[in-house]
Length: 54
Image (cartoon, rainbow, N blue to C red):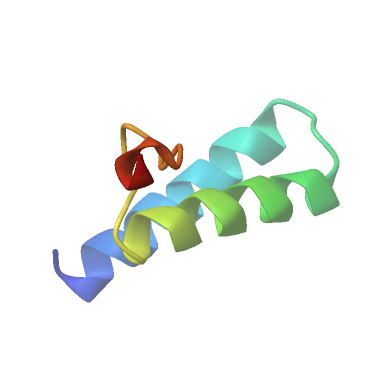
């Protein structure tokens, strides 16, 4: 994904959350957390349960 598209998505999500009336701190926290997870490789599903060592 191009860098400008990633910035556009992040800023768009931030503006959308701000438009709902949520506090700015929560908006930044949500966008930063979701952005970091997605940019660092996404969710691993099924989650590690430890059953692989049995």
